[in-house]
Image 1 (cartoon, one colour):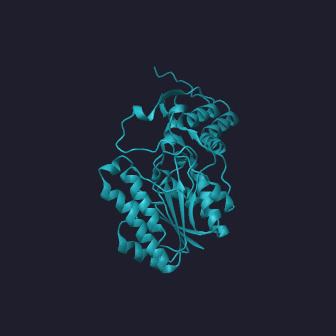
Image 2: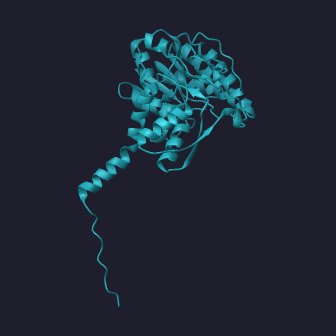
Image 3: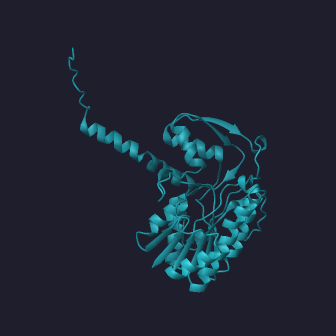
Length: 312
């Protein structure tokens, strides 16, 4: 079947397009090919392609910047989703859209379930929640809430740009023995882009009931626990500087507790690996080029040094 991936230059879009292209005819559109904020262009291009599935990975993700750029955040996260949903409904395509844990206020003490009422605390979060609602305009839809995405640092986008998330940059710092400031009181359920892409594929292939799902790796941890585990798996001590949310001034409010329950996804037949397992696979992938290079150097032996010549 033909699958359209919109926003394919991002870390999630790239992972989704790469995985689904193994079994399907995937068309990847970056912002250069389709400006999702142009309603007429969206309708015309989708009509011409007529895909069976539309996967929306386009998003405005500057959480703090959205406080001063509400129009831009709403244009991408809200009204562009409406355009894609209407286009999907017109051609009877399945729409896959990705939401965020930020729609909750962070006051919970146990992982949020899909039926719990959202309470966004920022312009970014509000724009994403409105986008979720518009996604339901397509009768055949999957809204998948993800959180603390990581994995883009291991890949290049179709535009040749290296995409990375907070965790990707933290791993860079660990590998370079730099100091890392990490929250000790913000609890998350990290989401590995490869696992999110795999879950997306399985939902589509199984024809699972349409609706809202929390699509995160299993388990929860503070950011400090996640980074400590990453340092341990890398065999590094890690120069970690503990930070509390109250000690940091941020333009937009973040939910303090934002772990999500993926029990509904499991009930649909899609079991997500633990975040520790995902982290191990991700770090192994990050280290593959270095390991392969060292193995090749050992195979070739010492590099011959050029002889010096007397030029007197």
